[in-house]
Length: 215
Image (cartoon, rainbow, N blue to C red; front, side):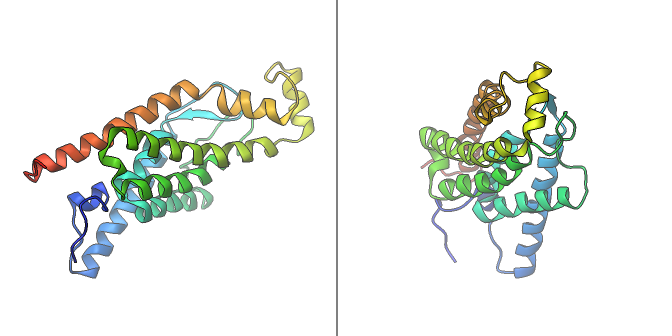
């Protein structure tokens, strides 16, 4: 079966689908589990600037998931990652004063992998401006789930104690979202987004060169 060259993922361009279902399944499992493990490793690169949500290397890895694996395998890798964490394997970014307060971002990882994969499968990964837009859409999905979870995770007592400790300006949900979910991450997320957006077209250029395609 022939595929449009602009409707496949980077992984599929490097490792085309086989006529053997067993080989395809083996490749899928290796890519999905391998990328889930990579996401878990990226979670261990963490820095807490506030007591709730750490800065990690995950966002960079997740934004590349859809482009590298495609929407289906990208989503599957994030679901495996989520399932591994729920099962007790230490793949989440642990630590912080409020463990679990950043779990919403992990749900956003699944959505981001699908969004970026869906767009890149339609050729957005080949155009630098479009790939930035795809990455922005993926980043928005991560923030949507992460900030929603963060806003409603804390009890009024926890918020009041955080204000008393000088870790929060006021006990409002809006203050939590801005100070613990957005403010500390803007610069870092922009850098990771641009790195991911630079990596995807570069990977496609390398693939074309290896295959001798100058078009």
